[in-house]
Image (tube, rainbow, N blue to C red; front, side, top):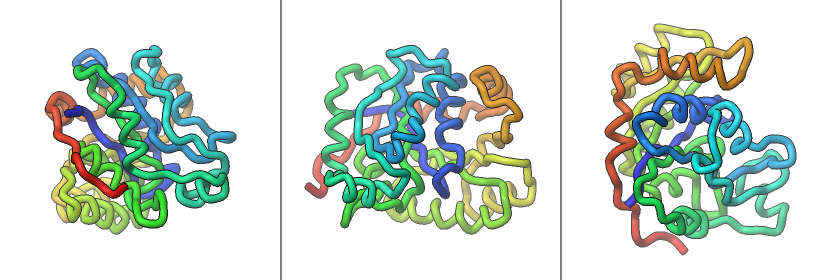
Length: 233
């Protein structure tokens, strides 16, 4: 059994990594947290694990720096193909099952959006299904976000996944927020700004003052979930 949250978004570069760092600040005093990015592409340009370590002010025990690491900032299936490698949900999941600390609550960040392909037959959402964790969806506040968010929420629910909530990123837009909550039947748990100075202190201040003010995510982080025991091999 594992505990925690799976973070996905409506697009790549939407702000999932900064939200993950904010979650570390928000909940480390209540839960034993550990961040993990199972699949990272474009590793020669960006390293989300390093970003979360820095912005989240994480110690070594709060980071799992293992998994699929591929060059070229492309979809995982294409980056793997060009690197002569293969990714499967089962192989990725085994990295997690090798961890022995049962008290940890995981903050697991997916690559790109929910339907990004991992290989010829599996997508990022299949990995989320394997973990069987509640999903936190990171979305933009810009025009078009209603459609993108509702499509993502629908795709997740069709696969039996629980939506823990939504975090919006960018300039606040009350109309988009209300539409997402109403039509998507989800709760927006935070509206993260584009920080003038992106550093650990600014992320921490926002997280402690504005992220999940009603502590909706506490139970999701606390409760253990049974991962699926059989999957595509």
